[in-house]
Amino acid sequence: MKEHQQKSAYLPILIVLLWIVVAAPAIAAGLVDVDYKALVSRSDLVYLQPASRRGHGHPIGNGVMGTQVWTTDNSLEFQVNRTDLFAANNEHSGKYGDWRDENGTDICGACARISVGVGGPVFRGDGEFRQCLNIYDARDVIQANNFNAQIFVASNRDLMVLQIDDQREEPKPIRIKLYMWEPPVIENGPHTASYM
Image (tube, rainbow, N blue to C red; front, side, top):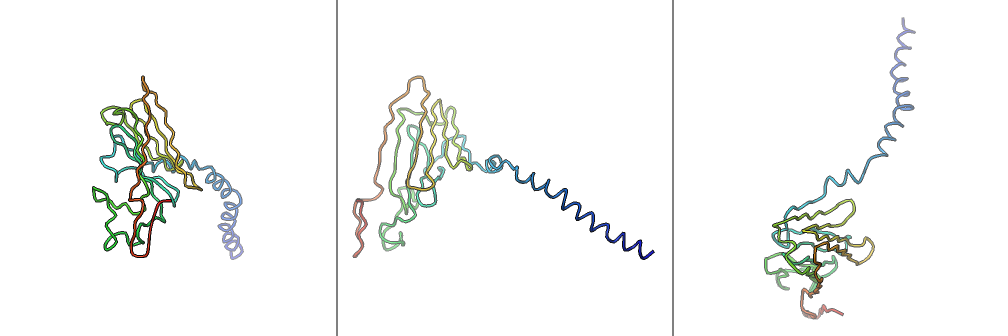
């Protein structure tokens, strides 16, 4: 009887070993075949109407340089930022000035604003509109009334790429305006910040 109990005590161990040898590699193979794009894309941020203000746009960037992406009725808008930009020092509010825009949004790190005029009220929100921050591909895609734009920031340099596909019946000229966010020279005691 004792001998039978000893043999049956080994049975669970044998089953576990068999499972490790046969089933575990099959499960691991299944885990390797995960569709990561589909999994990550479940977290995409999609707007079906234009953001009501700049602070509600989509952020894209590479960890050092980035931009906020939003639209007005007639334009694509970008606030270009860098993590290492301070006009006075890292105390960007208080005694060194209040680095906020007209709506009270903190703009510390803001280098410039880029406005891309598209020649008409494409993004008014009264027709087709879709803005999708695609997390897997790290790009923002805007589609509105036969006008498409894709924006991404290069992963290894300060480079923002904008691709426009204007499929309107009568495509309009694209006009790009670059605005300096702050004055060209800011002095604070012995410290001077200036554009080169």
